[in-house]
Each structure stands twice: as structure tokens, then as C-alpha cells.
Amino acid sequence: MRNQVTEQLKKIQGITYFSPLAGRFDFAIELKAADQRQVYELVNKVRSISGVTSTRTYTPFEGFANGKNIQATDSLALVLVRVNEQTQAQKVLQSMEQQAQVRNAYVVPGEFDILATVYGKNNEEILSQVSKIADVQGVRASETLLAYKPIWA
Image (cartoon, rainbow, N blue to C red):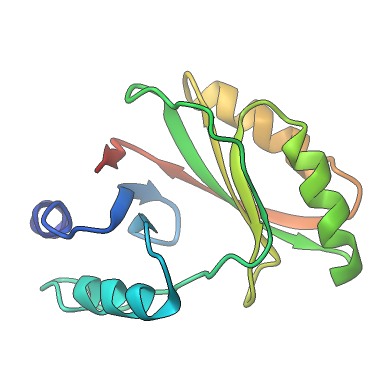
């Protein structure tokens, strides 16, 4: 089923990258959209793929993208972060921005407070970076979803 979903995702314009995940979600998909309407349309295209039973969308509000080039061979992980108090989210973001291997991090509404993408040469590097994030003052909890075989559009 994952292979069928992968083939269909490759056909959707507006996806920055997608990857199967190790964790509670099967795939991570990063969208490239100009406005909320386009996000809605892209998510509906993903939902229409045979084999996709549910989706969860995190819309970024504030945060950063460092613009660093990631190599196709780099490993990726999504780090879902909860902070102690919402007022600490900005301080956690600032700390994450100083960490070289954090590709982006954004405040998001919902179950988590911050969604970050971390990269490295291998999973060991990623886990080292995730440990640094967990040690940031104000972080209450985090969950890491390891991506494998990311596909860049």
C-alpha cells in the first residue's frame, strides 16, 4: 500500500517533499502553498489517494526556515515539541534556530506547540540533535518521527 501511495504523491504538484516515517504516522508531507485555500486543495488531493485513511495538518504561524541545502542522502526527522507554557514557545524557537541541523521550526496549533525538521548525515546525528532540542529550557516533551527515503519534488 505504501508504494501505491508513494506513486500517487509523486504526481501532486505543490509538495516540497514527502517521506515514509518510523513512528505513529505513515508519511510526512511538506506542502508548498501560497495561501490557505491552496493548502486545503492539496490536502484534499492527498486525502483522495486510495489507501490514505486520515490526515493531520499542521499549519505554521511563526518560526524560521534556515534555507540550508539538504543533500538527497541526508537523513530527516520531524520533531513534535510541547512547551511548558505557550509564552515559552518563542524562546524555544530562538534556541532551535541557533542549532545548525534544524532545517525549520514553526509554532503550530493543535496537539503540539512546535513542529521542527532536523537533518543529519545519519540517524545517529539526528538523535544527537533531538537530544539537544529536548534539553532546551521550556521544552516539556517531544516526539521524533524518523523519515526514511525522503522524496524531494
